[in-house]
Amino acid sequence: HDQPLSRLRFLKGPPAHRQMVRSVLGACGIATRRLEEFAPMRSSSEEQRQGWLRRAEQLGSQV
Image (cartoon, rainbow, N blue to C red; front, side):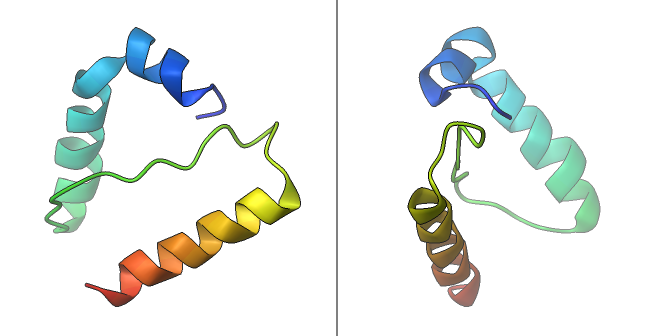
C-alpha cells in the first residue's frame, strides 16, 4: 500500500486485513495474531524505512 494509513483504514478497513490474513498468509500456513502496517512508503524517509526494517526484524525474531 502506498496510501496514508488513516485513508487505508477509512477506505478498506478491517475487511482488507482479514483478506490478507486469510487468503495470503493463511494459504502459506502462517497463523497471525495481529497485523503490523508500515506505510506510506513513497513519502517515508530513509530513517523511517530503516526503523520499519528494525521493527520487522524484531517481530520476526519473536516467532
